[in-house]
Length: 88
Image 1 (cartoon, rainbow, N blue to C red):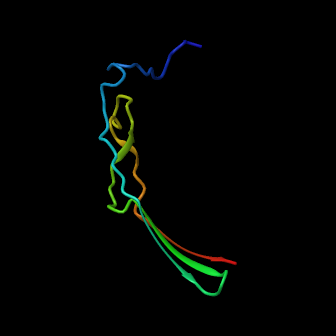
Image 2: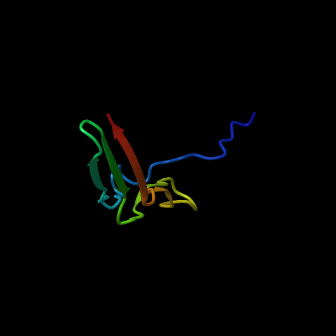
């Protein structure tokens, strides 16, 4: 045992030196309901998440080396959800 350390991770910048952009998300929802009988109702809903389909970086690798500042996650893509509900 030589006590050799294969790699050491050192912080070389102060915490907060690297800042990510502000994330502005736009979610939309539309709903329309219809009365079928006296006390029966059908509602149609559409939800759109991340409507502008932004792809802002959420996290980055902050360790020095070849992956320095490489994005590790981005904003999820635009997702649409359609739903129908029936109340009686």
